[in-house]
Image (tube, rainbow, N blue to C red):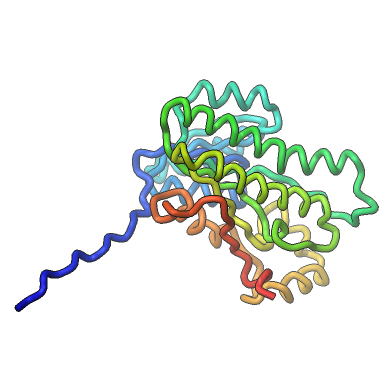
Amino acid sequence: MTQPSTPLPATPSFRLDGRRALVTGAGRGIGLAAAAALAEAGAEVTLVARTQPEIEAVAAQLRQAGYRAEAAPLDVSDTEAVRAFFAAREPFHVLLNNAGTNRPKPMWEASEDDFDAVMDLNVKAAFFVAQACVERMMATGTKGSLIHMGSQMGHVGGPNRSLYCASKWALEGMNKAFALDLAPHGIRSNTIAPTFIETPLTKPFFEDPAFKASVLEKIKIGRIGVPEDLMGAVLFLAGDASAMMTGTSLVVDGGWTAE
């Protein structure tokens, strides 16, 4: 007697049609690549940065390619402006908290100004952007995904990275607490933790042969990362394929933290 066949499971879609996504720090590097990935998957993407010409150019390029994108200049370190920004818009389904900075130097050389610059953007701004985003989501019953751009330095330490590590370890802790608070509301929160990625911001560092060699020694895959290496991770965490993931970190480090 022939047994009834078991239906094959359906792979969750990586498409984001009908969803609204916001990317901070979207004018270049990782933010630009993430915005492109989300737009290509069908999301309506809002690109945020302080530098309006950069995000206007990227948004125009995406629209020319047939995608939906708008540029919205915003200083994410201005908490009142952030609150007003989200209150005036339809809720987003996806937030990529990507804006960040770094001031690499030995801990004994770090000034109070350095501390404030790194922590204010990497931690404080990320917190209040997420807060304003989820307030709008919760008020409208919108479910979705928060993605915070962390770092491998939120899992390990590194020379001349005391401030950056402090900010990224803080982001990891915030992310876990966000996940617990937001799970009952159908909102997930995760981080992506990349290794060194060559962007306009980091490229000058790799002009130092000794520094580049020290980085390549730790990245077991044997090359510096590029923004495209993170696009798949962004899509995965943004949509239904990661529906059971919250409060964790997707480490994209070429093996750096494996030893």
